Amino acid sequence: MTERQLVDWIRRRGKGIGDDCAVASLAGARDELLITTDMFIEGVHFLREHPAAQCGHRVLARGLSDLAAMGATPKWFLLSLALPPWAGAGWVKRFCGGMLKLASRHRITLIGGDLSHSDRLTADIVAIGSCPHGTAIRRDGARPGDGIYVSGALGGRPALPEPRIALGRHLRGRATACMDLSDGLSADLPRLCRESGVAAAIDRPLPAAPGATLDDVLHAGEDYELLFTARNAPRCHRGVPLTRIGTILRGRPGKVTCFGRPLAPLGYDHFRNRS
Amino acid sequence: MTERQLVDWIRRRGKGIGDDCAVASLAGARDELLITTDMFIEGVHFLREHPAAQCGHRVLARGLSDLAAMGATPKWFLLSLALPPWAGAGWVKRFCGGMLKLASRHRITLIGGDLSHSDRLTADIVAIGSCPHGTAIRRDGARPGDGIYVSGALGGRPALPEPRIALGRHLRGRATACMDLSDGLSADLPRLCRESGVAAAIDRPLPAAPGATLDDVLHAGEDYELLFTARNAPRCHRGVPLTRIGTILRGRPGKVTCFGRPLAPLGYDHFRNRS
Image 1: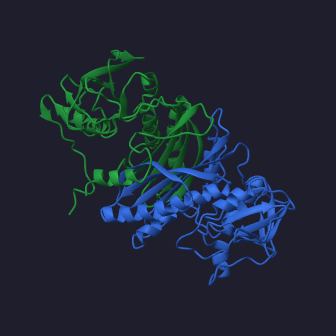
Image 2: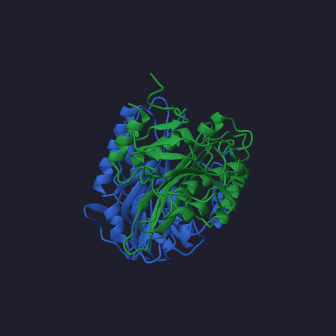
Image 3: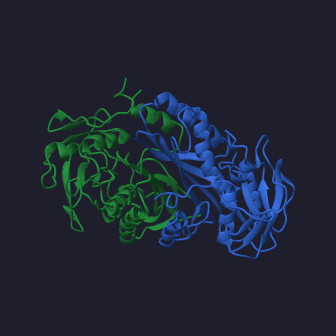
């Protein structure tokens, strides 16, 4: 069983799973809720040598980026922290400081959380946003003929990624599908195509961050740029470049070519890469 | 710095933190949202030898118990799982099976989540419920003269705790304060008293689970019974015994006596118990 098959097994037991955020509605409310949760584990997503403030920024940025990908306005977040012996009060204050600085810039309010213990630092963030009913941008709306676009530059592995909240809101009603690039273009574009039941061809130059190799541009995670499809898009939104990189095609859902060759993700599959 | 001081430092930077759930409102909605998040870590909250279905049950039960403590009706949940090499697809299916069985009993729907990797199994649950505006039961409403009550029996460390959802909803408008017993009576009753700015005396027999010692009854965590204060309460709600164990008093906030002697929690303080 591959990881994707297991995720599909879980999805069939839930409701509406498959986008960057879960969508939920309360009776009478004008807006619907977008909810996302992300774990951040020492040794997997960061090392203890990383500056604490930067870690705090990145944990919240992951959640905000999921909200951006669906066009949501950020509202509230919760933080769970499991602390190992090496993480003292000073570390936690710097970590929270980095997180709260980003929170205040995007007007998202800390409303709860949980503190416990572990031998590896583990943080989990719940980020909640809202958008008017039926306007959230999903992954399943890409249609043959749509252009494929990315924001910013890829492969830069920025220490302090800036979630594309303003761009995401701008794309409501304009993009046919959207997601954030958290696992790299080669893993994320096939996902968007599978959800939409379409294929894709990358056939234009990719915007690369300074110093990034082609492997970085195609496979590096944690760019937190937006990947979206649309009939057309401007070259730039509020100073953020938007680059058309290819076209959505009819074909086997999830099939992606890059300059005529099949594009395969370099990611790790928990359930396939073991005996 | 103690853990409580650090939690206070974080609380001052957030909004409305201090109850079992965070409370949030959407414009126009009749109900408000109750949101809780809990981490469950291998070696801290469970061992890999534990049956997977039981682990799944307990992860969701923790979230549901937080909703019960505030009188919420369960609505949606999200699950994040970080898997170590030993946890294969079979384990994950049994884990999800135990969780979804409890979910269907309490009509809470899985709407999203996240799958990643770690060397220790880590699960994080986000549980979301609702209740009419202003009816959520908080920890800060206990007043001198109120009776102190617990549901069920304490110290039993049940393998499959049953969250007290129906009782929590019944207590809306009846209890002055409520929380769930996740860390044991000796840790949780002082918390409720601190939030309410009152003291408390335990002066009546405590309801003990079969085989539980007095230490178990006072200090064992994960009972997931409700601790609440009220002017009065029946002896039983839908077959669940309710036992008066003491009285709320004027006095130093958080001071609790048990048959005339100070009651101290046996818990571990991350920031005090280290050099």
